[in-house]
Image (cartoon, rainbow, N blue to C red):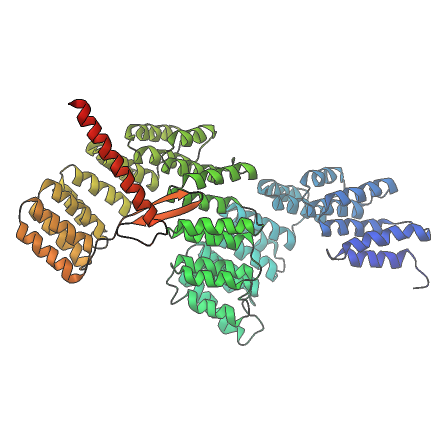
Length: 637
C-alpha cells in the first residue's frame, strides 16, 4: 500500500485484535506507527486492549495500560472500558476492580465486564451484587448481563435467585434470543429443576444444538438416563430434516447419562452412532465411551477403544486406571498408572487416588510407599482426597501408626479420612479405638454414612460384640442410612458367630437381599457347623442351593455339617454328589511382592517359574524344624 495513515493501521489492528491466533500482529503493526511518525489515538489503544484480552496475557495488557496512561487517553470512557474488559478477559479481577473504581461514567459494558470477571473467577456472590449495583445506578441489564448471572446461579445451584432473574427477564419485555434461552435452560438443569428446564426448552421456537445439549446434560446430571435417551432420539430424528447433527458435546452428555444402564440397549448402539458420525478418534468422546464399557464390566471393549485413540491425554489414562481399580483389577490399574507416567503425563488427584486404592486392595505396601513419595513430589499431600487414599492404603496394609500419623496432620479431616481410620482399627481387631474415633468424628460435626456403619458393624462382628452391634444398627436406622447388603452381611456374621442362629435367620428373611445374595445364607450355614445345628444348617443350605444349585462351597459346608454331628453316611453322599457334579472349591490365592513383581500362588499350581525353588526351600525349612525339635527333646532329656 503506497500511502499508509492512522486509519488504515487502526483498521488492521482492530481486525487482528479479534482473533487470538492473529492478535500478536496487532502489536507488530502498533510498533510500525512510529516509523511513519503516526501517533496512536483512542481507537488504537481500544484495539490493543482487545488484542491483549484475546491472548489472555495480563503482562502484555499491563504494558498497554501503561502506554494508555502515558499517552493521556485514560480519561477516555471507551479506552478505559476496553482496559477494564482486557483485565476481565485475562482473569485479573483485582486490576479490573481497580479500573472499575476509577471509572466515573460507567455504562452497561463496564458493569458487564465486572460481572463477567467475578463470575469467571468463581466469585458468584460478588457478580450478583454487581448486578444489583448496576440496577441501582439506573442501568437496565441486557441479554448478555442476564446470560452471565444465570450462569452464576446455575454454577452455585441457587434456584431461588435464578427464578428471580428469570422474572426480571420476563418483566423487562426484551427480545429474548437463543443464547439467553439456553442460559435459562442451563440454569434450571444445573439446579435439578427438570420440569422448568423442559418448560423453557419447549418454549424455544427454534432450539439449536446448544439447547438440545443442555437438555440432555440436565437429564444426565439428574440421573434420568432414559429421558436423556429420549431427547437424543428426538434430536436424531430432526437431524434428518435440518442441518443439526449431534456433536462431541452431545455424545459426551448422552454417554454420561446412560453409562450405568445396560449397554446392550444403550451404550453399544450409541457407540455405533459415534462411529457413523466419524468421532471414534475423538479423545473427548473416547473418555466417556471407555467409562461406559467399564461401568458395564466389559474391560476388553474399553481397552479396544483406548488403543484406537491415537493421541491419549491424562483423562483417558485415568479412566483406564479408575476402571480397572473399580473392577478389582488392582495390578492392571497400577500397570496403567506406571505406563501413563512413562508416556510423560503427570499424575493428577484422580489417578493417584485410584492407584492408591488398588495398592490398598492388594496390600502392596512397597507400591503404596512409592506412590506416597510421588504424592509428596507432585505437591498433592494437602489434597483431602489423596490424603484419605493414603490413610486408607496404610490402614489396609496394617500400618496403623503411619495411617494415624497422616490423619493427625490434617487440620479438618473429611468423612473419607475418618472412615479409613475407623475401618483400619476395626479390621485389625482394635474395636474400642474404632468406636472412640467414631465418637470424636460426631463431635467434629460429621454424621456417619453407610461406609462408617459397615466399618463399625464389621468391628463388632470381629470381636463378637452383639449389644454394641445392635446399638449401631439402631443408630444407623435413626440416622436415615438405608442398610445395604454389606451391613446385613456384618450383622448376620455377628449374630451367627455368637450362636444367635434364629435371630440371624430372621434378619436374612426380613432383609431385601435374602432372595438375591446367597452369601448371607452361606454365613449362617458355616456357623451351624460350629454350633452343630443340623435343622438350621439344612434350611440355610436349601436357600443357597435354591439360588445357586451348583454352588461348591455350600455343598462342602453341608458335608462338613453332617460330619460334625457324626452322620458320616450323609456326609459321604454329599461328597459323592460333589464329585458327580465335578465341583471344586475355588482355591485360595496368596501373593508376595518381590522387587516390584507380584508373585501369585495357589494350591496344586505348578505354573510358577520358580515353583521348584520354592518347594526346595520349603523342604529345607521343614528339615531345619525337625532338627530343632530333636534338639529340644535331647535338651529336655
